[in-house]
Image (cartoon, rainbow, N blue to C red; front, side):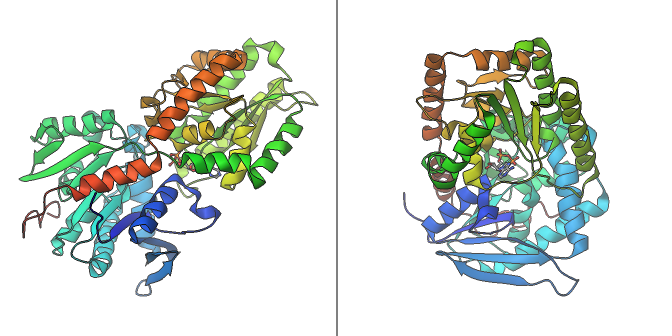
Length: 471
Ligand code: ADP
């Protein structure tokens, strides 16, 4: 593959490049690619400044340039808390009931995308490849084109893409979809997400789909599924060296022969946490012999704490965990352990390794990297069992897990029983199959295939698509 002169990645939040805070799957995948291509990473600085005092910061770190922009409080509230997290996130996860649309939020969303385009446009070189990430920045390419950008620009959606019936409930959804046609390539996590996008274009936008090429609004755009993966070796190493190894031994000692079931998720309603805790309660109810023998550890750092639905959800979860502990617990056994904070990646890897079972049961998820991290952290000679929701993108690839319906508490409780009783031979066999798929679709393949597909798109004719989506 011919290497582009420079890769420019754009995401809502850019940086940090180093340290524990750079731990998210997106950051890890991106930083690797940017180092490889000597690139630029552009996004919000994480800082809020007074109107007129917002600044563009630029620094070179470990072979890449980090350029970040401050936002005003009003823009941050409307764009990030309002439209992105209060409206688009639930909608993209099929939760029309939680979707809250306000016109001012949409205005702020447009304003921020416009500011990003203005600042980023000045930094772009003519032959840059631009890779825009996620639903915060749907209209970014349209704004860049409006300012004359001719570079190849790709977009990757890290969340699911909803059915047309759900998407169509969003006021202004046609504007958002139209704005996507200013990209040269649109990538989704899974084939079903891609198929739902194609379906929407055919049914709601009067467009055509031929192979991966989608035509609508007088423009053609290439589309594809690019399932995101992890750096498998690195995460495995985390579990077996230094602090990961230490956490593993500490945890094993604390467990004193009990089996640990682990859940690791941001505190988000899409992760199915309430149903998961309830299913564990159901398992305990049906299996008195397991009392005192099994612990469920849920690690769930607070996210988006400014949004009401998240605050309410957190309280509900705390009540549900306390209810199970009150009902089943004994003075020498607390069934549910609940940690409300983020942990360093190495610590997490050690905890995964020490856990006999992982419960990864989102009610809807783009990919779910936690499922992949749990598998990578296992000892192949004595691996744990992954129980995975059919509605996580990862289920498309990880059929060797115990797949469950997260809406079916009985099925989840039975899967817990099956996982605890699973013979070593079967555990090894399933783990080996899961590892093959992790290796096949790792993070390097994800970014290389996306960049190769973007590079291969046809060069843009002068003026083409300049005004797409900005009407
Ligand atoms: P999402 O992007 O919706 O949060 P993913 O499962 O795809 O879900 O990615 C979550 C990433 O955040 C994973 O890399 C995971 O290890 C990390 N993560 C989740 N919970 C924690 C935690 N408590 N501490 C540290 N990292 C976490």
